[in-house]
Length: 149
Image (cartoon, rainbow, N blue to C red; front, side, top):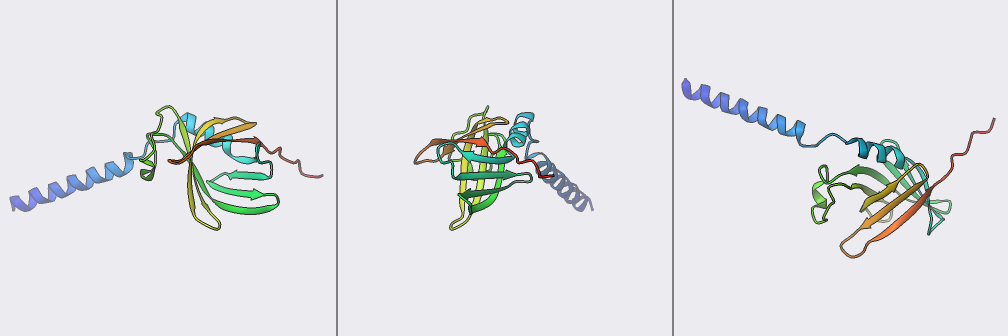
């Protein structure tokens, strides 16, 4: 009887430890990542490539258009070195930086990572992260058009 009781207590302890791990394994978003997330939401036009318009929608949806044609869509999310997805372990992450992951579908499925250098109400600068190359993409916010009355 004592053995069964000990096994039951051990199983309960393991379940509680696992539940705690699930609850606390992903830290809550910081004020900085929340602020950057809010600033990123909207439509952005490429400075170097003005035909490129990237729209980050509330809820993590992103679309890329070139000219008037939508060329890719997918999801986006911000993270820090503390909340980084497992697959990004091959990148060296700065503890003070905020990062952006885009998963795009179009002709091919692409997972793209950026370091957010700047995200203000008017400008967005993203440092492309890659083992082969890196470059800065600069965007300007597309002004919202007021609805016609």
